[in-house]
Length: 436
Ligand code: SF4
Image (tube, rainbow, N blue to C red):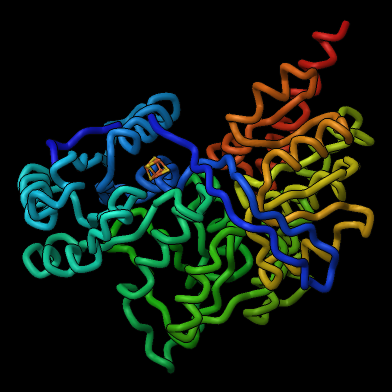
């Protein structure tokens, strides 16, 4: 393994087979070539959130390039991630990759006493040679605990999409969350990485509601990692956290059923659901949310004329597609042509799916050629898709929005509702200007 390097990379393309649709609601299930970024991408927002964590990708130069290019345009602070680059001799099994990894980790931790949590992040190459990072994390953890907690997860692009990187990372944290005893008072746990400013807004609203015992996963610092137990009620802030949710339930926590906090309606539903779960008086809840909700509704009303009646297609990418489609349809009057998502978690998205009209074409998985054919036939006013598909579609006169921008922008909550709508209004305004 070479020295540490920060890193541009590749979108995963995986061929799979079609399988029949057995879902109750008609869903087009597609299995074919995919065009998505891999789970390493999540490191870009996760390392900003967890301020004393370090992400060490065990991968190739391609993995290094992916992170470097994504980070180069998105961040300005000193990176807290790197790639231990696997060379040919690692891949050929000519050296003991575990020994090499120990050497790299020991050197890193000697130099960086600020690191409190180290994530060893697997990649396609490390998975292909079956490098056991769980074993490495255990072995290295025994040496470096309690100063540094060492965990592992996979960000590989094999069979995954880019937001699954966050899911895998948070799921890796769940087993090390402190146990809350069964008789501990009930606590709310917000799950999903949010920009600090948005998290603070939500914490203020929960405090006004009277909820003071609120934990956040991921925490900004290792020492603030929240506890979990049978009296933990968790509220998902992101729709792509299926594995994390399962791990939390394995430790006794129970999910609060709610829409996701996008737009005035989604945010109201999310806050109301939490308040109800903790027995807060409904009149008080309405008093607390009335002013910020009215502000969000006024801001959205200004943008509604630009978006109402416009037709939109989502290609499967970020796993944010279903709640965003609901927001654009219900709060801005957009017409949904197709809502594609890489994986559809029916239970977590149940309240959002209920809102989508029967005429909306729902698809799960990806067969990129077929989906592009449908976009060409439908000619929606705007298509939300990955970076690799946006330019070709623009060349064909179709307006696009990069899905990844939705993950990098603060879009949750009342105060960001108009910013979220603006992300869709802007490409349409640009198209209208170009057409004049
Ligand atoms: S993990 Fe796989 S898909 Fe991601 S950059 Fe590395 S090689 Fe490419």
